[in-house]
Length: 523
Image (cartoon, rainbow, N blue to C red; front, side, top):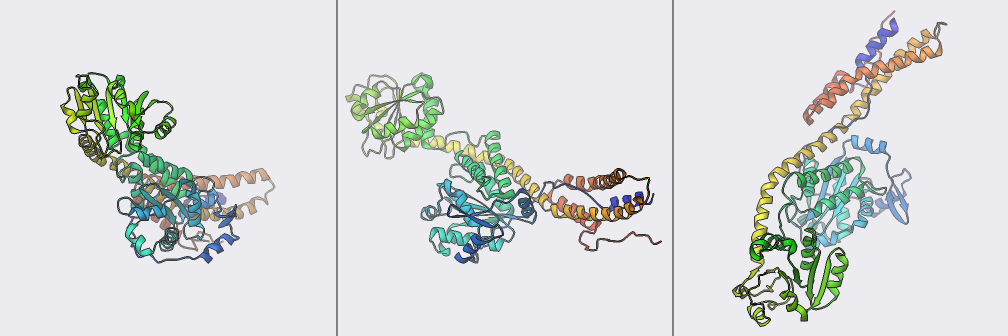
């Protein structure tokens, strides 16, 4: 039948489909620090007054309207590139970092402010004590970078010349790789530390909230980064071993307890002199090892009481300085962490208070300046350790973590490539849509001619004509299954781009005429 041959001809050049995912970022290049400043307060006002839905005002604050899922997909498919502009403890002065710091509760509010003028499509802010970073996606890198630099200058009150000396700017794959290293703890001052992963996770969660500006690209990137950070910590030993003085003190006392005291660490009676930040960190690490009780000796009650509130699961005995030697006398391990400029414990004081009788006692000095006199080692059965001893533990563990970085980077690279693959698939959406539109156009043209003739035949009912229409759609969709599968099987970015080019050329998608009317037979 003439209709059947027409449908088969149509199926050979057409297609149906569904939006699918798979992508790649172009090779990232570090942006020049020469950024042109753009935007103005009037532009910001214009954005808030825009009736197209770019921005609205909620509770007196301009807020970017939340885009629909379809709008986010369309934006992402138009070539949104990932960027990051920020500064960290590695290369920025603390005076600059503190001027840009943003409380977590305001991350979304400031992200909306960035996106209001339209140059930045998606944005997410990560602000911690050691870093301030703005991740954003935009189709025009020059305009977007200018907008972010304008925002930084306005917020900090610093001239651009000062900002340029402190910030870094990355785009594309470089920006993706930077975030992966941040989440993995490889960019932290203490390699492998876990707090940054929690902070990146919060950044992701805020970005996908109702008032967040994460969008399709950034929310996917942040989610991948969180997954990458978890993999690094679960599949490598990069987070193992103490790399701070307080955690090293706990590790050393636990490791040496049996050797020095002939006593399991879980049975040792513990005490700490001082109630400052070091003591808080010390109790945090001890609590993670199942600490149930500890005595705190301090000159006042205020700080120990705060620690009691912070650690409700730990039984904390509070003793003022007058009771120091009573506590030392009944303890097996004593940590010293005071701000005193004089020795709190030394040989003379130990002897004076009758603690030279040979009972094993471990002393760990984590104070600077030192709290325990070096002559304490001359007292029988007293085993003192100072900060230098602890630093050796830290150095050993840091070296071990450095070795783990190689394996960690391999895992991070896999996650970065996964995101790049997904990102590249978005660039295929316009081609897929073109293929669908072309297929449907030919299908409807041929179907219109055929149904006009069939409708003149009294033997065909409306239900049968509907069946013919469904048949035409089914043939087109099945014929497109092959090209779509070919795109999905292209594993690398280069292969996906080659496949897109082949399809575009094969079906003449760049030709507006597209073969319209070709194949029509003359009568």
